[in-house]
Image (cartoon, rainbow, N blue to C red; front, side, top):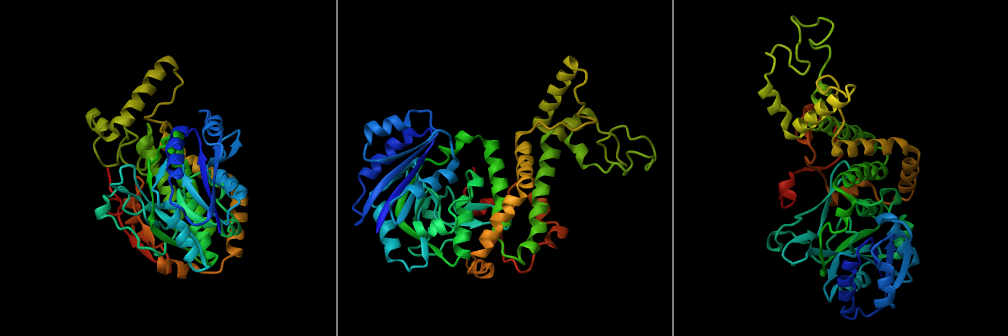
Length: 434
């Protein structure tokens, strides 16, 4: 066996300095191995620095940022190894990291496509990734993320996982390519969840190696994308993961609940985070127009039958974000009289709401491509979802604003299919909050 260690780097030269130094001090894995780095459109001099200080590293350059998925696909295609170790650039692998991965994969049954290592924080005190869980709508969580290691549930050697973390895994090159690699439409995030589901449905497995430890500067690279832009990727990619991978017959049953969740999140963000947002929750025929209620409705945001709100009551209901937005709009109307009035017209100003709507827009504009990807996934299926979910039940976890109210609504629960084994939980149970 030959192994290729593949590292993607975007403006991460300072991280590579530590990562590559740690790779120089790896224990002998007992096989020949190489290091590949893709400079993913960096502007921090990464390529020149690598040529000068690490001439034995195989450098691949892209003039633009290809994203995590396409960048890693290019690395795997260029790798000469029979197996490829995907490693984040903002990590520090322990000396026995590569040897542990190689030994685990070399001694594993042939149907094990990949092995996943343990990721801890930079100080080695808290868990970053040991095992992941997937939600019914395609999202996923790192179980016990940020929990102290003594309280975290770390899988045992050889324990099966639903997916390996894309920042610390060794995968057979053949398995990666035959499964289609990472979905390049994702750009980043949840691509490893999607790949894991495809590997399992294709008849292969993924197992864990606790001795393959890397230390991780969590979010060091992803923070460069911006919070709201990441939100767009999370929601879009989660939907695509669910759409492509649920088997025929089950997808049609779970789809209404997935779509209702998408709709609820957008509606909640629109109403709560934008000036005039509460107007979107009104029924215009519940006493507000057409003389359907006695007496004038002076406040279009008022509830029929209740006294009009006072100014202090409105301010408390708006909250600080909406108050600031309304104040800015009032100021704008003094300069530009045609500016919208949030008491009568909702105004879209919130970045998180915009990212949610962008995710919806992407899905609607790429229906044909997603359908093609789904057909390819289903055509190579060798294991049904029932067998997968017996091992890894999907979760129902209130995560976004409005989720708790939706998930406890009897009407929503009606659309959760009995054929889908669900495990209900809360974020504070799955991971360390704060």
